[in-house]
Length: 260
Image (cartoon, rainbow, N blue to C red; front, side, top):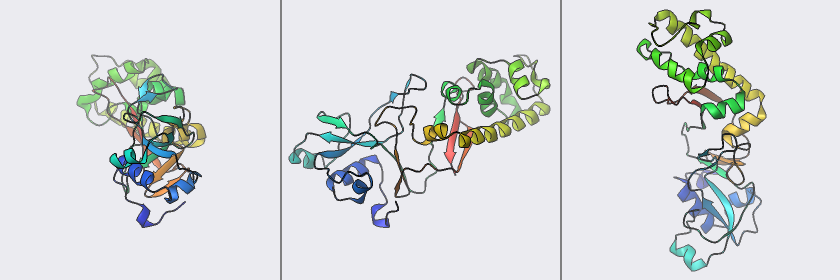
């Protein structure tokens, strides 16, 4: 599903929508098997959608999708062929399996920012989540790990048992952290990253969730298609790395999945 360079270079979702709506002979329509598309238009997704994993509204995986829209040509021209959910009132039908996640060319974009609730749904482990999201670099930050464990509703005893590190069992708010803690935290975090990646690659459902949101969002807000470096494909990348995301001082830790 390769495309030539002339088809590449969309600046953003808005540009994609305008280009595809203006050119109904664009090859992407054919790839989506939507050649009979007189009343079909790309629509840009607006706002957060309900996650079936956490029952919270978050940003969906698809950036655009195809809908059947009742609109006059004059109105299309007036809007420069741009349609979005917020301003388009005559969407008759949202086409299943037409959602596309649009990624800019040559960018190391973020795939998934995973909260503790989402992580536990996927991997069924509070301790593994904490292992990936603990502070491990600066000793002065290690007291924030008390909040990391609290956010996941686990304890230092449970954490220490899970990682077979008895030295960590008695940590509390008064603990004075040392280089020994740093060495152990760094090892735990590295091993947690590797374990999470391994578990993800072994589980097609979780891998699909990271890139496409297939088990997380209703159609068309899961991205059945990925536009990466000009290639429109259904294949999910296998090369990615796991890292600690932002956590607001340990209060709201996240695990982030990024492509290589």
